[in-house]
Amino acid sequence: MSRHSGEDGPQFLMSGLSIAAATLVLDQAHKWYMLLIRGIKEGERVTVTPFFDWYYVKNEGISYGLFTQESQFGQWLLAGFAALAAVLLGLWLARGVTNRLMAWSVGLIMGGAVSNAIDRLVLGGVADFFSLHAFGFYWYVFNVADVAIVAGVVGLLYDSFMPTRNGAPKSTQ
Picture 1 (cartoon, rainbow, N blue to C red):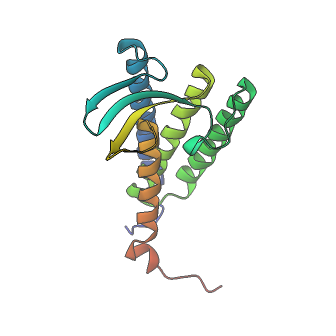
Picture 2 (picture 1 turned 90 degrees about the horizontal axis):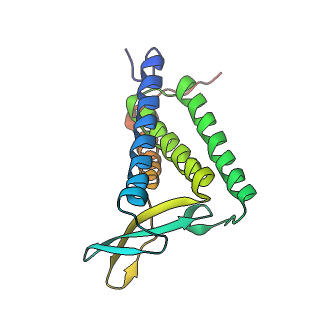
């Protein structure tokens, strides 16, 4: 069976959906642990190591705070966009994913997007907690869902450069 035969579609679908569900559960569990068990308050910084802090920031925009939406309608709009993206990724997962790496990558992106959308609806913005810093430079604050989305994009990029993908015969019809 070739890497791109399409005969494993249901297996890749279930694999991708399982990764999406695990990502969503892990991210939400971490966020609620930080908020309810640790009791961290918005703007509070807790030093964990010399280069890593827990720092609760509610991001009302998208990446790096772009397109900030302070209103409830704006948060619903961003959540709706994330839900639409997850549905379209789900369709791709069901119809076009041809290998495990793609399935897992799409699942990571879907799970992260849905989890961050849940934050927007429940908290009025995405809860971010991880702050890396060194030599006075602070990177942006992020969460498990953000890591999953980035890992998913990296996986898709890696897959697009795989020799079996690039070496696949092109249709001339």
